Length: 519
Image (cartoon, rainbow, N blue to C red; front, top):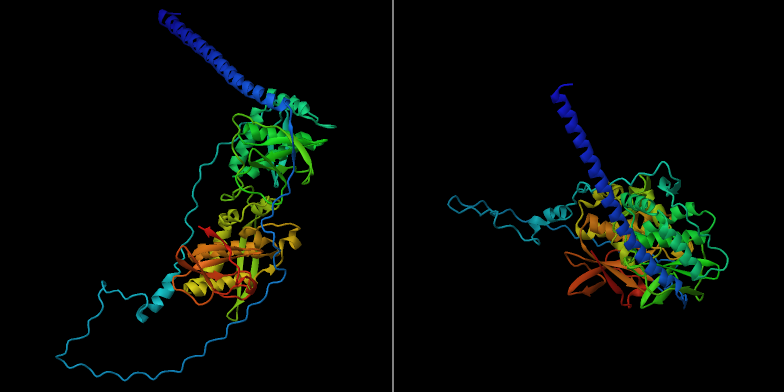
């Protein structure tokens, strides 16, 4: 071997040794950093365990609030058909004017700067046809796709579970001893938390969070997703499931508590919005609602929980529905028919089944949340294809009356108590899916149709026992209206069968509604 070869070998050995040393230094730094971070987490857990081990206080579960205490109408009256206006007698054609003399100046034609005013007869047809210039749906916005979840370790046990017909595989949290059974107290709960905090839970939590991001779950969706995982982790013990829900939510940064009564535990969550028909307790001025899944509870029961909370868990659960989940690609179609001006009209809608399934057991929250939701793109595309050709050639009032007749008569009416056994507001896709709907559901659907196809300003009128809408028309129409912030809004009731704009259900004519702005 010549000197040059020996020199090359020597240099290679130096480089390899340097890389090894650098890797060892990096590994030592990483282990030191991880130990420091773990130490911080342990300090958080130690402080939290002090809350859990201290005496828990007793609270009485309060009766869940009702969104509306007045019963809804069981039967909706049919509005009288307006009598057709008599056709005017034909007027004789005017005498033709004599031709101007050759030396007379010809009439001036309007210049582009002399555009006729909207009330001029010369522009009547143009106004009617251009008023509803319905735009096509914009191209779907490309949202950043969250990265794939951290890989599931092939060497460690896995948890396989289904969430709305879709299959997931996530790392199992190992070496966790809980088995909350028999008489439960805070000492047992504190011990279970300690076991979970000392476990290697982070890979599983990261995988769950990433999966939830990729299918666009809101906070309620995340909780139910975690619970589906917990059910497979502890298939025989609902208390262990709820305790794991509580642990995962807390470690994900959400504000929540666990409480116990006799031999069961329950989750307590303080959401951003009001929830209805769910018992709750008030702690430090905040409503905490009971979430039990399979564990049952009732108002009046006494439960025990702790004050204070986990240091970095301060996010309230957000029940808003501005973004709906995309769990699966399953779409279904439904044909609906109704009559308008003596003509049969048929429309076809597509709706996303994952939205319908996700909302089947959704806790009832504030009415405005449902009006703020946006249906799936497939629903909107089918809406435009079915309804836009009918309203495109109408003026604003004609189009509103057309949409009113559709929502009033294409669906059967049924109160939520009769159809679901509880109060349940429906989003537009649910209204298409279910066989019947009531006043809130129809108002939510009608408001979205008007917003998407016409663009008029809308108010929601919330009466005791009834909901309808009011619309600010470009040209005031006859009939009932309300004045709001100096503007006139014509009453439009999508439940009052055959009613046109300006007609109020007779029983509510003398009642002042609560007004909700719809944007």
